[in-house]
Amino acid sequence: MENLFALARQFTQSRKLIDVQAFGNGNINDTFLVTVDSTQERHFILQRINTQVFRYPELVMQNMRTFTEHVQNRLLNAPLDRRWEVPRVLLTKDGQDYYTDGDGSFWRAISFIEGSQSFDTMQDTEQAREVGYALGMFHNLISDLPPEKLADTLEGFHITPRYLQYYEEVLAKTSAKVSPEVNYCLQFVSDRTPLAHILENAKT
Image (cartoon, rainbow, N blue to C red):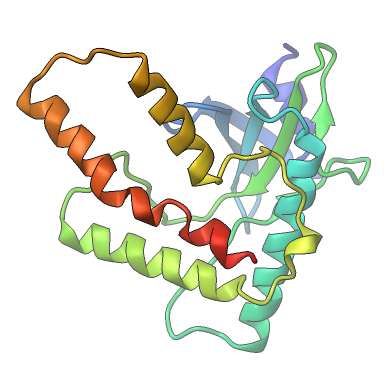
């Protein structure tokens, strides 16, 4: 892997690079916070996309640019009554939305939302309420984005009936130990099985 500073410089444009530090607790991509000498935006996020998970990272970036630009346009035309920001995709000095290093690793950069926080677990009900608000607002802002403008980067990832079918196949071959915890989980899935096809049925 190339030096992180050299990688970050691909996205700094004319700004002086000050520091690069590991950031967050993500499980899939490698994330770094980049600090630059600027009177406006002093930080941005540098990420190495895990191509073992995302086999078509170019399509991931295509999707990200499509939906972030759509949301930004929505917000310009109808501002909300509270702060709402989405990261912007930053371009390389060659005008690309990603950079591939000498090892073939795939890198992207996005703007950093100052004053924001993320949590691995909910600390209280107010945080849970904010998550619900954010999810609902995100769905609202992309509700008029034509699906055909987005590429399927993880085929089948959101098709619940496939997971249910695999679960049932594994369950049929497994003799699970009887316990209150196991019984609770089995009953939980069983009670919700009729709901598994709702989204797929809605497509037709």
